Amino acid sequence: MDESELKVKLRNTQYTIRNTLEQNVAQEAASLRPLRILMIAPTSFFSDYGGHIRILEETRTLQSMGHNVAIVTYYKGSDMPGLDIRRTAPLPWHTDYEVGSSRHKLAFDVYLAWQSLVEALRYKPDVIHGHMHEGALIGGVLAKLLRKPLVFDFQGSLTAEMADHNFLDVNGRAYQLAYRLEKRIDKLPDAILTSSVKASRLLQDDFCVPPDRLYALPDCADPDRFNPEKFSEADKLALKQHLGIPPDRLIISYLGLLTDYQGIPHLIQAAARLKEAGKKAHFLIMGYPQVFHYQQMAADCGVADHVTFTGKVEYRDAPAYLALGDISVAPKMSNTEGSGKLLNYMALAQPVVAYDSPVHREYLGDLGVYAPSGDVDAFTCCLTELLHDPQRRQFLGRQLRQRAVREYNWQAAGEKIVAIYRQLTK
Image 1: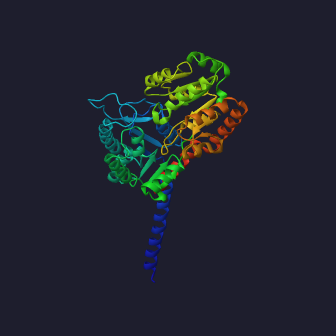
Image 2: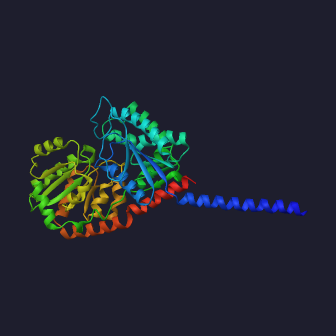
């Protein structure tokens, strides 16, 4: 090999080394730079219930880690400080959309799909993060157009929820069509975050989703905001007086949607049984919609003086209201949806009476007080036992708060989400 050939070979080697180093530096920089995440939320975000809390806390956590998040959602909902929320135009013929399944929701989602396309082209995201099945479907189309990864935040079965809301008959043809559509949607994402291990198993067993795409990411609590030590007895007494609750009654609290499948009629029936037995207990039922409907139900059952319906409670006020509870309840009868409200009960060191389900057991473990699903008499017995046992209430409450702080914190969840994002964007 002559000198000129040696020089050429040396230059080529130097070029290869430099190119490799530059690629490594670029990859390292990409792994550290802030990500741009486009979240698609097919709902009236923000509203004070369920999945909205998950979207809110995920977004806040990702922002605290230095990432940029834009949320595309329906035109209604509260604007939360510090969040980049981009809304659709309102429907010209339907301005009062309610929670749950509705034929009008199809039109809302058409508007959402168009707005999501506009925002995606403008925002140029690194990752598309779809909430609920409509968000995953819209996100799946955008992901293919933009060649970006899609992450799906699975909060329960679409067809099961529609059946729970009495929008579909499980024996009808429409249900089968919806089930097949759900199965196709579940195959679109590169990764699916599930709110429980139970949901991961459901996706594997019933919808044939490959297990390597599934990541269990349970809902979490904010133990600083939901801290029982922040609320003095004087503050709680003042709030009780404001709500008209007699000071000598133990409070059984619920915060969430007011619907039959959430078990609200069962709470009213339990209140009637406890009143008949002469127990000094008062039910504090917080949430919406259908407040008047359930107030009338309580009056018909003769317990209007033992049940207080607050209506909608703003998320910022939820800790103070929930802190009034001596016992919290989770009478939901769905086996597919998450139950994030439990984490706030736990963080506030409150014992929890719940209907027995895999999701409830996943959160509460052996520290929950369980009744067979739908059994109002058993549920009432569980409440009665706790009402008579203050030491057990305190023990369970302390242990549940420790469990929430230890196992269900948003910082750890955020790190897991970002690790998934990074893996998909390599």
